[in-house]
Amino acid sequence: MTQDLILQTQIGQHKRLQKLLTLMGRNEPIEPPCAVRLKGVDPVMFETQWRPLLEDMEIDANWVDSNLKLKNFRLFATDMDSTWLQLETLDEIAAAAGKGEEVSRITTLAMQGKITNYAESLKARVAMLKGIDADIIFRILSQPILPNPGASDLIGALTWARIPTVLVSGGFSCVTRVIKQRYGFTHVLSNELYFDEHGKLTGEVTGPYGSPIIDGIGKLAYINAYANEYGCTMDEVISMGDGSNDIPMLESSGMSVAWHAKPKVRPHAKQALSFSPLSGLMAFFSDNPLGR
Image: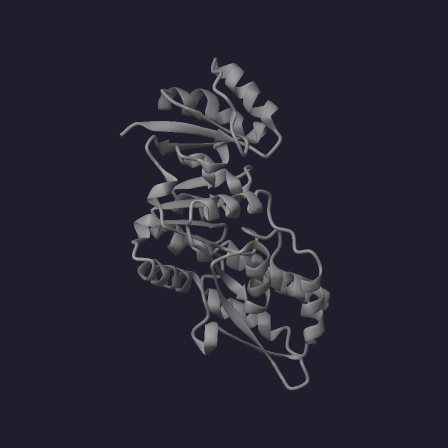
């Protein structure tokens, strides 16, 4: 099995790639989003001579099967907070309610894998928000919620390829419903917040329709269920995520990307992107629709 080397970086930073290509004595074309595919590269020479330069140059490098094609995949699943979106929505809600520092501290520990029971950490954070008025959440949702770079191009490419898309999140349905509408996801799955008769948070949280909270195992279970619905296996699923609760789905998917992920997460994915946009996923496929 032959492998190609995929080099890529932030959108618009073609000069970085061109500098590296010149140093390597290569002149292949740079294609959208901002990537180049190199064939016939000696892996040992690259890893010893060129890999040490990439961190400072802010360039991602990944080895892929030369025949990896998008058309061979039938489902796409992604995490939401800090993957699809530039923020952690629970932290935003907490900050607006004056509880930001204490909630954010637990979020950071959970995403780093230092708190291993995600469900319990989520319950603890939501409990801190008991009594918060729903207007705070609606006010956040009424403002622009910025996606990470390349989000629109990625969803467009997947839609063009007729691949169903699933936004699966340990966050909350009041947010995922908005993101589904804005970006055209086929399905969204997330946890539920509860409000009392006065429109204030009760401090309780469950999974969809009162089911167990969606954690890492829950994400994988729901994605597997959708794969069954579409008549495909996990080998035909593409997944992206950045935190510890994304590890099960990243490990189980046929193609997975640790996107700007925590160090603990990267070894569990097939590929890793630390500088490239979300649409950088497309560069791994020899039938990249962004280059059509």
